[in-house]
Length: 372
Image (cartoon, rainbow, N blue to C red; front, side, top):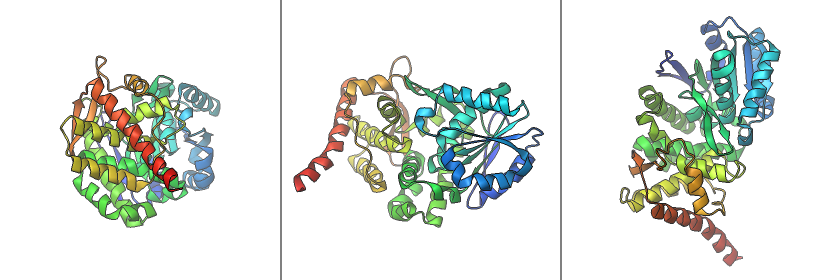
């Protein structure tokens, strides 16, 4: 187990990562000096797997458990209001501590609730998905979706601690497990050639859940996220690199009503589209584009590109938080391990990239029909 520190304006916090990290939960909670009660926020599915363990670890410190749906369609202001009202009814005051046990949706909602309830209460993350362990539980970005776009309402609110235990991933359905690997690929592309090369050599071991391989890529990803957010907590510069593939991904999630893609799957398509755009702009070699596309493909088949007009997808991109003065901005790779922030694209080029992604999505299906 390793401790990775993250600097934050509120004083910073530690991420405990590695097998057995969950056992440290009582010590983390007691060390915070919270003299209020502990309230767990989780989902019914996660709680069935891990509720008994969490209850035993927290003991009498746990006042109540609030369960919410952890689907992306529940990541909205209505859910935030409901969790806050549940806290009121459970007797939570400004000394309360929330322990968020679950994936990205649980962490984002619980984080926004913690930032808002009584003008701010304590928060500890116990992420149970790969996406949450390597990305969403770190960095203090909380928020929920609007019908117009993803994560448009939220706050920067760092947790008091994060416990990323790979053992908690054992309850993940296979599709959810694979979805998280796309975020790990992202870390390789944006700044860690060693990680990317390891994935090229050991992807099958990672997908099998090999303890050593999984621990290596998770720890490597957490360390990179910690370095980035420690240097740029409020996304004023360097932190933008973490959005590689996400401008496309958030648009795909939005136009499909958050019902077609898991977040990591949308990021997989987003990285393919961003790499294609980088080639179109003369920034990236076709060899590196092919390496990125092959890496995404090795994780498993992505849900097909949506049968939605490129113009509608571009309109959804316009609602992205990274848009400035109506102009879309992208994080694009220059080579594996190096990306450029703030790249723009002409609409004609963007339309061409979107059409090429749609065409690439249907070709395997056409070949399958021909063989049958």
